Length: 86
Image (cartoon, rainbow, N blue to C red; front, side, top):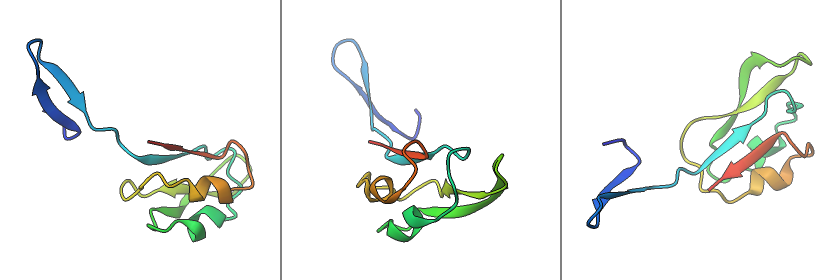
C-alpha cells in the first residue's frame, strides 16, 4: 500500500487516504521576497537554487512538516505565488 493509504475498510474494500498537507509554490509568480519562509512556524519553506523566468530564486517546499496553517499564504504579497493544500 502507498505511504498515505490508511487501509481498506467495509464490504467493498473502500480505501481511505490520509490527506497530505503541503505548500504548492508557483515559482514563476514567486518574487523571492522570503516573507513566507520567515513566517512559517514549522520552517518547511526555503529559498531554492533554481532561477525562475524573472531571474529570481523562488521559494520551495522542503517536502514535509506543513501543518496547513496558512501563515505563509497570508504573508505572501503575490496572490498566485503559493497555496496551501489540506
